[in-house]
Amino acid sequence: MRLGIGSYTYAWAIGVPGHMPERPLSALGLLERARALGVGVVQYCDNLPLLELDAAELEELIARAGEYGVEIELGARGLSGDNVLGHLALARRLKAKFVRFVVDKDGDEPSPEEALARIQQFLPEFIEAGVLFAIENHDRFPASVLQWMIEALGDRHSGICLDTVNSMGALETPRDVVPSLAPYTVNLHVKDFRIGRIPGMMGFEVTGCAAGQGMLDIPWVLDHLRGAGRDVNAILELWTPAAGSLEATIAQEHRWAESSVAYMRTLIPD
Image 1 (cartoon, rainbow, N blue to C red):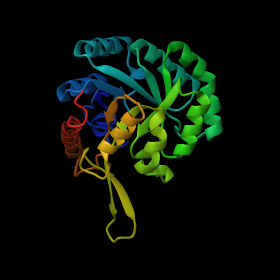
Image 2 (cartoon, helix red, strand yellow):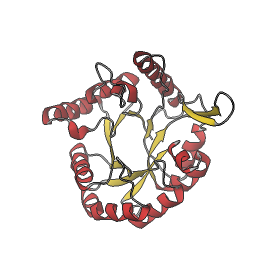
Image 3 (cartoon, rainbow, N blue to C red):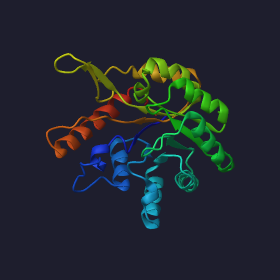
Image 4 (spheres, rainbow, N blue to C red):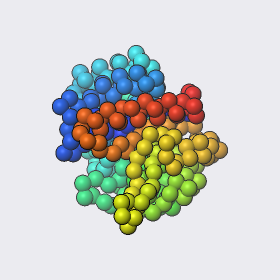
């Protein structure tokens, strides 16, 4: 198990809709952050898509990652043919072990059956390339549905990118999701959180925090994965709340990244 960061560690620095920094963090910049933090994996997802790099930029990123000894992982959103096959070609180029997919994109929310049928169209090409098709638990689908999908695809050729918070969108907590999905997990997103009453006490809110500072029992998650025989990379992700300004938010995000990596190093020394 290796520790890494991803483009959702630094979502604000990269830019979120309606909040773009003057100098957004680039793909190469994220790699440099990984080097500075001393982690050996970087996961580039849909908020910093490598498919948008030109040939020279991609060559430089690959060369620099090789120089630093950093493994590159890929994440994508949506199951359109161009998107899926484009990321598969990129995975071949990067020698990536898997591509992580979020099923939903821009109003395209296929049913589990439709999503499965789409993935099955592409699976032979993934098998030929030796690349796993990884589905992230992302809001809509409960763990039982995701388990059904992976078993239908075959767990030798597919798996779960296990996010520790996303399944709250399907009314499931980490205690519900981790035990059932651990045996199928090929990648882990470590995202800590807190749940508290909103002002006025009429409701709850889920907010992010630095790893080790919230309600997520990270040692318990890692123990479940190891107990299931899953030697997977753990990618730190952050839900950093907005501060008084974009600059202050980006600074907070970086402080949380540093403290989170320091905490995770007590659990994953590599």
